[in-house]
Length: 103
Image 1 (tube, rainbow, N blue to C red):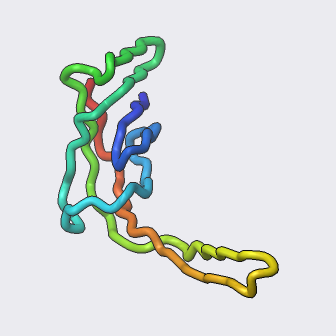
Image 2: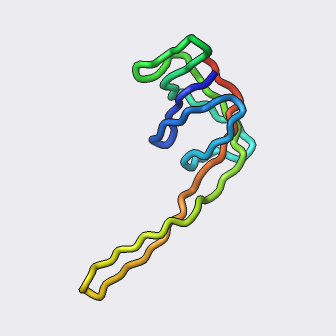
C-alpha cells in the first residue's frame, strides 16, 4: 500500500515505515503530524485517485529530526567584465517516518 502526498509544494510517493526528507515543517521532534493533502492511494489492485485530493484519506507521520542539507554553491560569472559573485545555500529539512496510511 502506498500513497502520493503533497508537502512543501512537492509531491511524494510514501509507504508505511519509510523515512523521507521534506521541506522544513514547524513541528517539534517526536510529535506526530497528519497529511491530509493525499492525491492518490493504492492498495493492491484498488486505486483511489482524487480530484484533486482523496476525500477522507490521511497519512500520519512522526517527526524524526530537523537539519540542513548539503551546501549548494552559486557562482555568477560575467566574462570579460572582471566580475565574479559566489554564494552558498543550505536548505532546511524535516525528516519524517510514515506511520500509517488511511484511505
